[in-house]
Amino acid sequence: MTTLVLALVAGGVVGLFLGALGGGGSVLTVPALIYLLGFTPVAATTASLIIVSATSVTALCAHARDGNVAWRIGGLFAVAGVVPAAFAGAAAGRLPAGVLTGAFAVVAALAAWSMLRPRVVEPRERVRPVAAAGVGAGLGAVTGFLGVGGGFLAVPALVSVVGLRMRRAVATSLLVIAVNSLIALAARAGTGGDPRWELIGPFAGAAILGAWDGRRLATRVSGDVLRRIFAGVLLVVSVVMLIDVVV
Image 1 (cartoon, rainbow, N blue to C red):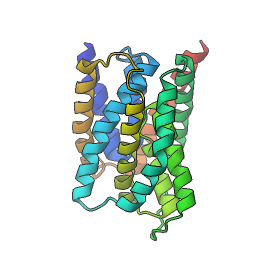
Image 2 (tube, rainbow, N blue to C red; image 1 turned 90 degrees about the vertical axis):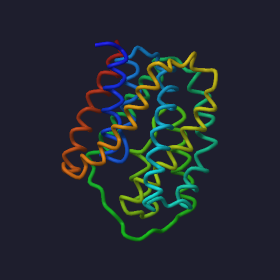
Image 3 (cartoon, rainbow, N blue to C red; image 1 turned 60 degrees about the vertical axis):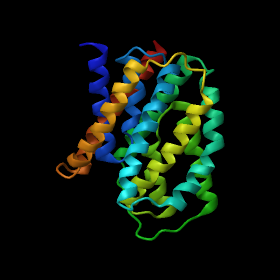
């Protein structure tokens, strides 16, 4: 199987999970780039930011047309994450590969745990500025450092800290993800080597198309089933990455 086909298949799978679950699918992007397409960890996290930015902006536009985005709340989270995303993005490009791989393995395991937790929807929106700013800063740092969208953290945070309903939390998280990813990408300019656009482009395109199919899949398959499958994949990925670091 050629690398182009692998990029298309991997992008489609990432987009499928992202569209079906509303967050977390982009966590698979970095491992796919490293182990399937031969990217270095630094190059993979930078390329992931490009892919996540394109996918999240596209999905955000679709949710905005439906009126699901809480712009003021999402803006608060996003603004709080701008500086951490920039600093973390700049720092990540200068760290050893093993550190990035090990940190990513831990985040993948946390994402799997998050997917297995029951989600409680609070019907009332209540903004807690200090808490929202703290969580937003943490999300920005994670996005900048590891090149992941952070939807698996943003969605539960928007539900628990602000009290958004799940659909609005998913839509609003895309605003936070898009802003953090773009800021982190700008901070990494010149640190990730020459982008392999011949693979990044098809990967991003397949992810965008896969996200649309994922939204349809979510109407036919139980969300709990999808989350368990995704969590299992992430656990395997995290173990493989940890073994790679140790060995």
